[in-house]
Image (cartoon, rainbow over all chains, first blue to last red; front, side):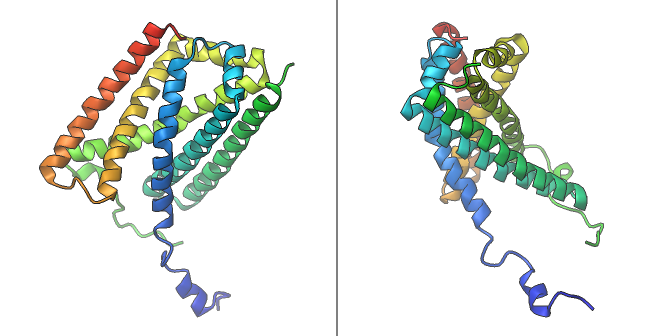
Length: 130
Length: 130
């Protein structure tokens, strides 16, 4: 006797109607990353030095803050989607696979929040002064 | 979940190594490397927000011999993943499947990634940034 209804069992089978979302998000983030990463490469090349003052000054300008935040979001989203597939492909031990998938998602969100908070802090107040 | 001992894809051991599958697995490996390397970007941003002292410890690690070695590998991984990612987007759009052309675009990707990585570091060194 199972608590699962026959319909629930049936609906739980496969990825009907939802199979393309992961693939599509991977492509959308990759397209976003083309201009964002190239902007970042040229920005790095254009920097005179990497002292704290100049880097904070650079990160704190409105355009750079926004582009850096977008870069971070796109990188982490793309990374989450990619690493998820790597784990799904190579880790076949049930509990380890699920732990890694959950860990990856939590880590990516945590890193994203830490990065975005830092960018906002820098752009509002130039970062912590202590 | 019941474990059935049937072979699971991808069967990495049964293929002859050639340009197509070598570049495919290299795309995945550089993707994983870039995900780990994104932590350096995050450390740079968070370090900048935490203040001059925290930033300086991040900067000194990245500018040191080990850091530069990692950044070199990171940049090479990035330019390869970027070039091959564009190749993948053309495939996704339905172009470039001819066997000879796919081989050619593969080699072109490798050469372009190597050339752009070299050019990037020439510009970094000649620009005096560090």
